[in-house]
Length: 69
Image 1 (cartoon, rainbow, N blue to C red):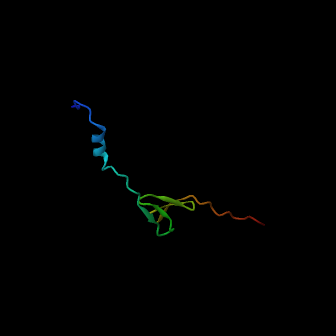
Image 2 (spheres, rainbow, N blue to C red):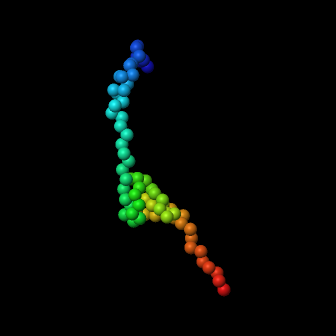
Image 3 (cartoon, rainbow, N blue to C red):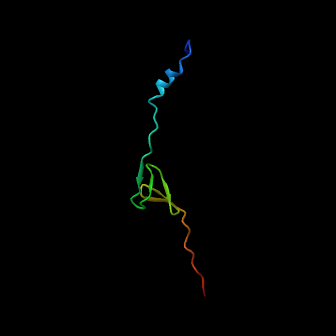
């Protein structure tokens, strides 16, 4: 594998890396819950996991039934 004969300057490396920019993440608002979330990601709301407006996992506590006799 070829290697450089001489060392590259720090300026040369910095010039090459100027185009690597961080982009802000895109946020969306769920049509069902109205919560904001990252695009193409599932999100938890009130014990339920939503993806594309549908409930995927429901971990909300079950309603307790009173047994008074």
